[in-house]
Image (cartoon, rainbow, N blue to C red; front, side):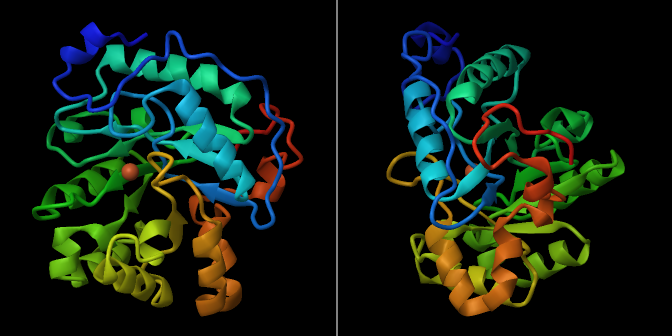
Length: 281
Ligand SMILES: [Fe+2]
């Protein structure tokens, strides 16, 4: 488990990890909220030394809050940053924390990762980073700078027989400066994912406008929370309500896992038998 000493060796860990002493609450039976069921492929609820949840208890509270707001499958996707890579040691620790959280999450918690494109990742087998139970790999458009390495990484993922999911293009410098970049990504057949918080205007008017534009023009086909903490929770219901108003019946498939090849009715026991859900795509 992480300790303060091991954190210092990583060079980046803005939040406190204390998973070794955090008490794990008793099993919470999942319940589908007033809306949903939603599949959320992007969140930072698993303590991993990044800027998401720092404690198991904090991560579990985010999971329960997601369940209360209609999410039945939540992917915890720790960041894989250029300066916080998935070292073997970090991967073991993340998988241990994940296994510890999973029975108590109140929804079906799955593990994935969010890749920030780097040249080093082009030399790795991307199967390591797959969103559990799918053939998808989540990667972000870098917040600043060009998207060249993103294109290369997505091609690398495709060459391995997997499918890229491109996170929050509407929030990034490359796409805000030239929205055609998003159209190019979509034209490759890659799944673009807009953040729920962008649709709610939480990142300002430009990402909000772009996010809606991508959904309305079917450039993006997926909405996720990118939830990090209590003030930025892993919730989709508010954005879903807005999407229903603006997009009508088309809204549900943006939130229900369809774009990931998942069928909640077939693959997930939404009645709440946590841990019993089947994991096949
Ligand atoms: Fe993220």
